[in-house]
Structure formats: structure tokens, C-alpha cells
Length: 329
Image 1 (cartoon, helix red, strand yellow):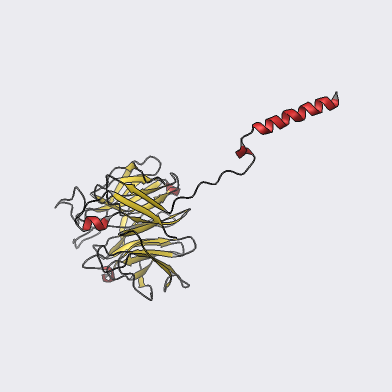
Image 2 (cartoon, one colour):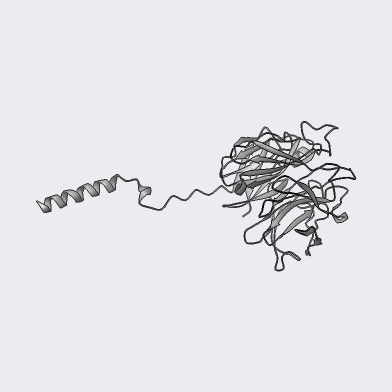
């Protein structure tokens, strides 16, 4: 009896084990990698900025044409994320720790709603709830207090430090702005070395060592800015002319995306490293970009992805609803 009971028990256990799903006996399945290239179409047209959203496992992109924000997954299909905060949107940054998305907005003359009242006057940062996509706050960066001399303004990119301060470039002026987590705006640095007759400081990143890096688009000069606003030039073997977006990897590599949209640049992705906290920098690799009009890059779990939003077509007088997000191999 005991042997028969034991045998019956073993049969039941074997049957139960066979009925278990295969995944119960192995480690969780690894999420499939993103493709090398994602091609999509968007009615909003001409995305210039891109960010990785770890909560949706997707990209967020803006729009020069409408200013609306979209979420794009591996299939390349855009889904609405947030309303337009202004005429056009540019740089995006996902601050998952604080459940927010920061987006720069401005009017530089390429949007559907551009007007004399907003052209090179509208300039600010919109803050969205990451979970819901709701627009929670807009911070105006073109006020008499911040820009007493007036002039043209149109912010472009932004970076965020460990405590939540945002740092914002304005290629039309000579200033870098700072916005505290509570929304208070100030000028971090104003320096004539940032001033350009065409396109000035563009891409910007925060280095965890406690400083910023930004590239001046027209000259390709890379600047290092301390948290107190002290500006110095990073020594480069060759200038990053047409330097648009910057991205910093966890291991300290700086990815610089250059183009020829508004300067005599080369469409390529340049990888730089430094042994002295970017007082000088060395080029480690250069990859000519196979898709025209690259603007900026996003760091993802699957590598660095570069956005080409067909802005070259727009500036050439044409029309396109296509965009490409391609991995830097």
C-alpha cells in the first residue's frame, strides 16, 4: 500500500509539473532588443528632439510643425503624449525619479502657428506629468528680468542634474538658464563667447561629476560650465561644427551629433572621451550618418539612438511626414 501510495503521489507530482508553464521553470524572458532602425510617419512632422521613456519603454519626440509630443515604440507608430506648449518643441528630458517630462518650446519660424507676436519671443520650458502626460507648468524664459536687453530668444535643449535643476540653452542668445525643481528661473551664465549671429549654444548635458557640457553650433566649440556658471573651453583636436545634440553615456562617453542644417557641418556621430573631466577631449570614433538631417540622440538600454526628423526637407522647401530613429552601432 505504501509503495502504491508513493507511486500515485509521484504520478500526481509529475503531472502537476508538466502542467506548469515553461516560464515557471526558467528565468524570466529577456525583453527583445530594439531594431537597428525605426522608420515612422507622423502628422505632427519634423521632430527635432528625442528622449527615452523607461516607464513606457518607448521614445518621446517633439514637433517643429505643431509642437505636440508623441510616444514612439519599436513599431514606429506615434501615439499622443502631451499637448503643444508652444509653436514648436525641441529638446526633451524624462525625469522618471520626479515623474515628469521637461520640454523646451519656442517659435523660430517653422511652426504652423508662427506669428509676429511669438517669433523669436516665445521661449520656455514645459513640464508634464510623466504618468498622465498632463501639462503641469510652463516656465517663461523670455522675461524682462531674465533678458533685460531684449533681443531674439528661442530655447533649444536642456539637461537635468541629480537634484532636479534644469539647464537650458538658447541658441539665439548668449545665456544658459537654470530652473529649480520648484520652477524658479535664473540666468546661470551670460557670456559673449556663447553669442552667435546664426545658431549659438545648442546641445547640453549634465555630467555627474558636477558640470555641464554644451556645444556652440556655428563654431563647433565645446564649453564646460561649472555649477556656479564658470565657463571654459574644452580643448578639442577638431571643432564640432554643426554640433546639435549631445548625449552622455554611463561610462562617460560624449556623443555629439553634427549636421549641416544651419552650418558647414558634416552629418555624423562623434564619440569623445576625456581623462581630465572634459577640460580636454579626444575623439574615439566617428560614424558618418546614413540618414540625412540627424539632430540629437537618446541613451536607451539597447544603445544610443539618433533621430532624423527630415528637418532638412523642411528647410529645403519640401514637405515630409517621415522620421527615422537609428541606433549608433
